[in-house]
Image (cartoon, rainbow, N blue to C red):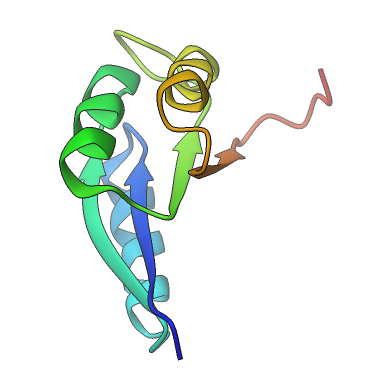
Length: 90
């Protein structure tokens, strides 16, 4: 079984910790790092080389959409899944 390396990016500590706890219970997932904004996410992607980034959209300093664009430009093989609490489909 191949381990999936995951980076969690969210500015809400409680949500980030809950998601981390859930994912840590899965034997084929390894949380390689966490970040609280898009700038930190890009830095952590460079350092940890995750397979998947779980990215919040609304964050301070750099939002998830801008960070996702930058990650896809620099690291096209890394999958980014956007997470949001918004109920609007825009």
